[in-house]
Length: 267
Image 1 (cartoon, rainbow, N blue to C red):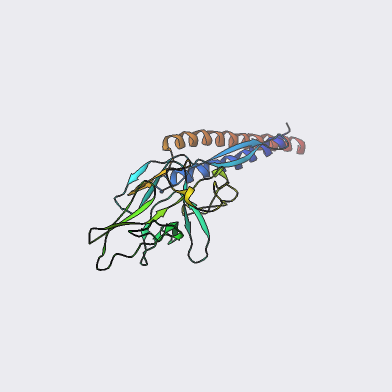
Image 2: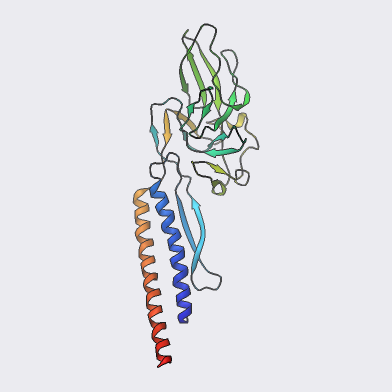
């Protein structure tokens, strides 16, 4: 290997390990981000065989712990699946594992960006929710007011009224993917590129109800925590740092030797 080849090799390694450290740093920064999924970088040698390059950045969709919040409209998924939310302004649809939901001024179930959670809606005391759309609270019986809202394991949103009656007015639906690694992060715990990830159903329907078809169950009053393993990240960071330092040393030595060779030729 020539000295110039050594320089090129060490520079490629520094670039690659910088990307690796950036990924680790992002994981650690999001240790407390609800529904966050950690990433890792894999490397490959270059086409010429001299040096290394980032082969892929892989996202781990392993289950995060469910943390109790005491907020009835918060939801955590135990098992497979993603919530589907829609931007009411643009109509854009996203997948997310972050169930930090609340009710807006119009009674819609929304995430922190105001995007509406999708599922079956329009239910009442005498009829199950069956209309696919944005989940919205129902209308209380005449003379009654809404007292509380609860979510069951199959995504049913149960409203309790001041007259003692109850109604399942909505049902949250989930979507799963054959290749979730193809989902693309858009920030704010949202993912796009769902069609390329292989949705198990082309449109949301009865088969997207939680607790069936391999989908997980929903735990109301909880939020899924980040799946970042801090011990693992620190271990990876130390390994990456040492590799970076070794290649930085190689670059310095190669530069020094090359300088000596140039000086020899000029004297």
